[in-house]
Length: 318
Image 1 (spheres, rainbow, N blue to C red):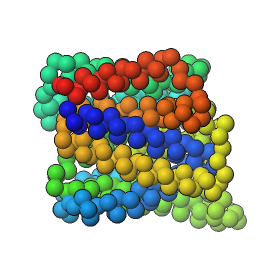
Image 2 (tube, rainbow, N blue to C red):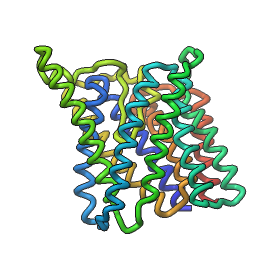
Image 3 (cartoon, helix red, strand yellow):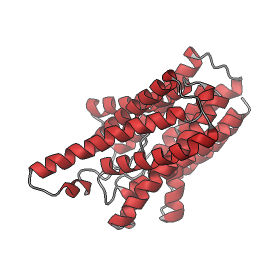
């Protein structure tokens, strides 16, 4: 199935965006990284939209706006739950929920029907999501009810983003992504603006809000985050502030490309399959960290990466 291959590639690109965002967030505040990524991604989509075509209908614009709202909600909940921790549990939980929600919607609401090997592939994909997203070496502690609730909420919001995109018409082209990215850009830029105004009232320079405040978590406008390297790994490679701005821009470009791949996969295949494979986005972050930062990939994550390829193959023939 072509959509399975596209979704798997999209997951790798999502992970690449998260990796770039994670590096940028070592110098810039996370919300600033998200806002810059939203704007650069919007610019890329506006340039790409005319060649791809697309009908601007009220319904598709509305779906795009709703997708943008879900992405902002996902980012807010994701930051909150990861700040609470433990990441080793909340990270894979968020990823699994982001896959299970759309999977159930596709199977129960959309009526997606798969061959037996396809259903087995969904199960393998979920196991792969847990193993790939697991953060080894972190002390395991029992998560709080608040952290669990936020992690589940973040996963549901990420999943809702895919469900909403799946509701858009085939002839809308990239229109839903343009309106989604514009919505997340407006919201995140408004937050940055509010922070700048608050800083001014305190007698501080407005640009002071760009500096890191809180956990150095990078995120993309679609609600994914650099879960694997939020607190470790990237500390060995700290970009300059100027480089961080460029990394944030590159993050947005990669995230926009991943969104386009996910949208195309949804229009050529089943929501259940696409959501399961898209949730494997931490794989892209892990692979880039291993190549660029020379980080060691844990054995459990290699198993997860292997299972991800197996799941992709099973779902491709389902």
